Length: 415
Image (cartoon, rainbow, N blue to C red; front, side):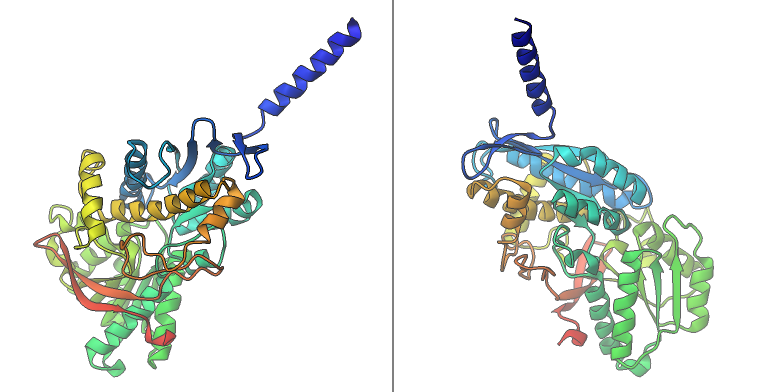
């Protein structure tokens, strides 16, 4: 009798231990039971994580970016979207790291056992330290970053041309519109991190390609408030064209300081240098942006396309009550669509595991998110090929939209 009780207790202990493992029970392709983090096969629920930047120096981007993913999840969970096989729903597990790399690592460890993949890893500095952990956990994290380093790593797939490519294309446009390299005195202000260095590298490489040397190279730390010294250095050097590899929290003060110092070069910002709140003259006077341009491979809010029509309908239904129109809602939604398409493939292939998700992701080839982007990209092989064509835009402050100043084109350095 005692022996039987011991055996029974041992069986209960084993059962309890098995129930404490991370994730939920799901079936693999052979029909046997296995544990897959973030998947509840019985109820057709997939849990995905987001490491947001809703506080800190990039919050003006991070807040709308978080909304884009929430909109997509609401669209899917309402049913009938066709984005996933019918009956499947998504549960978001969200955290805010405040653009802090150490906090990003801490929160990653907090949610890693509960998600199939990470749909948002906000920012270059908070994403880079995750790379060895992503590889160890076989966990895909979609970076809110176009750093060239993201495309080199299987577990951080970007969805647009890198900051290097943007900067190179911007230099081509500068030389062309100035009437030759001898008419250009190029400068730069860039953030002290891998995003800023990407912009700096591309700008400097393209300058050398055109036979130029940068006349001023200014940098700043995230969260810095005073840019008087940097702007004065650019002015003293006579820089006629300045690349801004900055966040909006720096872009506004830089342009405002420049206006006060009566220094008015041609400004060209990488994609993250802008926020749509700048269209509001109550935020910053519109005159400050008279010489401002953006280089980007991504669509802008309201740009006519079949995709945009559908997106705006989703926004009206699920997003407008949360925030006014903002391009980062759009970009987050587009990125989310890429991640959900890979999930659809994994479910359809009955290969729903972390490794299976990566396999599904790497079937995406000649892909443009149903026309959301004008280029097609491939995730079939690493380094990922996500396009090399970007264009130059100028803000139309009166109408809160953009004018195309130069069309999509690859950098001459890559031709």
